Length: 256
Image (cartoon, rainbow, N blue to C red; front, side, top):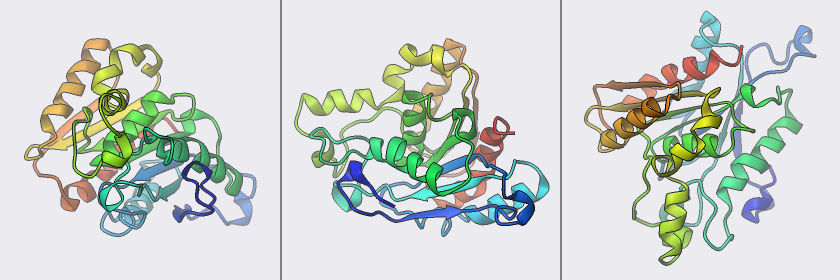
């Protein structure tokens, strides 16, 4: 697909279509869309590979636990070390990953597939860096996404490895981090999150547990409906693969 926000003529993206999509009787049917964001380092093959996402989607749809939906797995690799992007627009505008996901990707999917184009029929789900990004992008763009889910996400960006080309020098770097840290700005956007499906979970042995608990407390204090769970486990594919069905159920409930 074209990726003008990244100054690229094309970028790879993987798309999962539900079993009914190509059947003659479904020619006029339109489907909700979930965008699955990978972590760092990673790529668009992680969710269908290590994450077993297609098997989980098949199973949930076959049982009727979630409605049939299209799943889109983009590449979030950027200009940082080992392809880090934080899923944000870089300070100098050279790599606008937020715009790529929110604008380029959504526009392309809507033009290439039979999608439902209202916000309530779109959701972002991610793991690790992609988990924090899923909530950040949905919180910032409720006109585009009506649901979001995170597994082991980070919600307070701090100085991190390989991000210099993304955030730039101080004080611009601190400003960019704060603008993309839900814990920093959730009080300001709480009123517009009331109708959004919000799900997140974290492992009890995960370094991001404190931030997940902090976001749960903040959303509860603000009266924003959400679902938060903690499970045994750490920061790895065994955990993410085992809990993807939880976030899909949560966002799928709003897509029927």
